[in-house]
Length: 272
Ligand code: 2M8
Ligand code: MG
Ligand code: MG
Image 1 (spheres, helix red, strand yellow):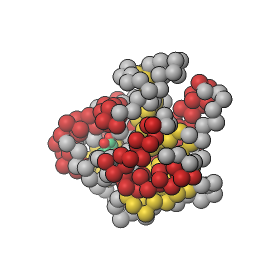
Image 2: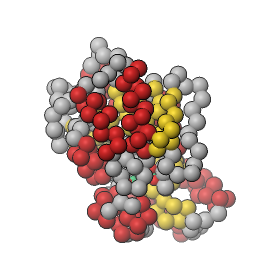
Image 3: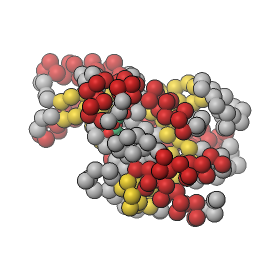
Image 4: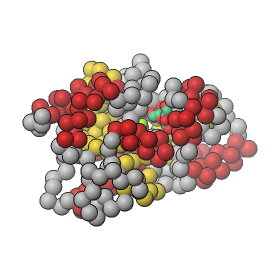
């Protein structure tokens, strides 16, 4: 088994960004040495901090599949349980500066009303999200994606997205924000990392479980052998996955739902 999980409103609760409700499932996963891969729209700096709190040292995927962070030596020697804090980042998309340049250029031709992370202060981001100001600073250290809140009409959003597409950029949706990125996604990055595991451990049959709550998780859920749709923390309807071999829809949101799905899967795979 290998587990890929979203963070916000999936393993972490929507308001306080805590995972305590999933702690007992996390302990079982650690005791069976099952790789737990964080697959998030968060930055390297944010994810690194959460990874330390979780006490896990596997590779992780950042900024909606735009980058994969590999602890050094993870695949060359069996370091799967070691607290390796050195890693290298594989970049899969255009740089943050490229995205900001395209936005600045477009703003001169046709200014739309939106608020993006680059324009917002850490204090404003903290206010909008419930992150601490320190965490908001880490969220501003972006490498290849730009989150934004749309404050303009729906027609203008369509025009904005079309313009971005002309520059090989696409828009996806997280819990609170839209995100601009290269045509990367959490599913493609997951498949890349799965291929790395398959190559490093050729005799293991890596069955993938993915957990997520928002449209940006859809490609990851679709590509996984087992998909867990976490009940949204807002009034939005849950994601719907058709033609998928196994989907679990949780009845609880965030880490409570994460724990609930894992208990069902531990039973399925006779793990205790
Ligand atoms: C942003 O991501 C979440 C993911 O669902 C969102 O769109 O609501 C990210 O930019 C991330 O860096 C940040 O930590 C998070 C805070 O809520 O917002
Ligand atoms: Mg989420
Ligand atoms: Mg996310």
